[in-house]
Length: 467
Image (cartoon, rainbow, N blue to C red; front, side, top):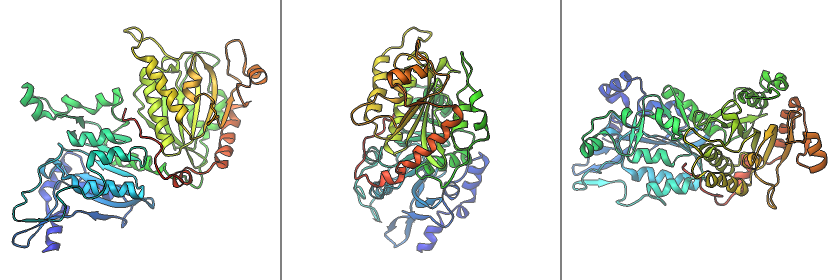
């Protein structure tokens, strides 16, 4: 009887539902998990929900929960099943996994399409395997708040995600969405009941809007691409044994014009390992770039002004983008490489000066001051106003830059970088662009690895701002 009940949860037992999923170009909940985890590493949690009065086992509905591994590293993963009761979940099993994640410091990847929580089955005549209260240390939202800054959390949205499902995404460090999906608090039925408007999920809360406004970190074409991006994000927790320079590294000295706008991406690519860049929020506040990458296999966070967009100016939205990314790097012990080049701290928008800009910029300054991970700053050309402080922080009693260098193309008002180095100690050195990657690599290998730094922590440094 137990085997028969568990078999009902497998895709082979529900061909009609599986066919419906495949007809829309999506994966089933179990296919998602199979693509995410190493084969043979998975342990399922909560397959059975209850036993009825006649002794029959009742399978859990609405989703699947697993512990497994990605490239040998343990993770927790959970997927709602939109074909089964709209992906509505009973939160207690997931609350147990959140507690386990906190206890063992295992990262989590969620698939969160669905319409929120659902009512549990009637208790009369059912012997529940889960308690009426929480199983473990946390309730659902309390647990997500506690995990912030302690373990990386990734949410994948590949369909309509509303109410509690959207909240799980909002709590997560990394939100990856597929084209055509939607994220909102009140779904189409609620909007129609309250306002009389009939809207599709995409019309109401399409992810393309969230991409422009910073509500998601990455927009991809389909679920396999989302799963690969989630794996890449989580793998940055661990250094790779080696890494190869990009072929463009040889031409890095020719990539910056003497004046005017230029694209920062080729310079980032030339400094880090080949094909190692994972950019976050690429189409939000595009005057700055935030990305995870590797240098000789070591994980780094990269922040950079992009002179191709508003000359790299740090607007109100760009400040929020930098601040949150620095918080992530600091929480998970990723050293930061900062590439500085903007003549302005901020710009005026079409509607005039930006309201609240002073508060948003001080958020970045506070984040940089609180940061304890090393930062290496490289000034490429200009650093007008507070640009240098926002991009690299101010030297303080508890934290000085790991490496503060300039390229020969740098200018500081009337001073060239050589004069600034000699007279004011603004930089540790002026280095050739072709020498920069080697200097960064050697310094990173003098540092304790990110994993070793995390292992020495008994509590988290701080939460990561949800915005």
